[in-house]
Image 1: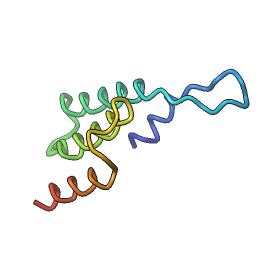
Image 2: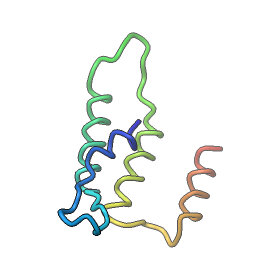
Image 3: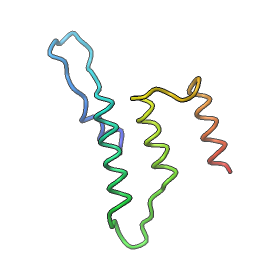
Image 4: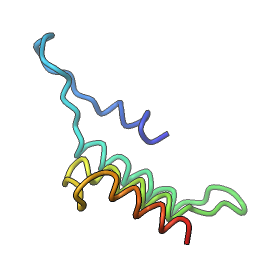
Length: 86
């Protein structure tokens, strides 16, 4: 849901031959707002926020703005796999 909704934040350049510019900061701000709303609003009886999933989602979009905090994608994937299995 986050990725498809975030696609709305794609800004088109004026020249048709130039590639699309993606507003990663705008997408991150939008995803942070979604997560905050889900954390702070009543959804329904028994609904509980998946905090680990929210953290992974925010980390994913933050990497597009700030860059990865690891050497390569495999290192990050292995860290999340080990953490999730624990």
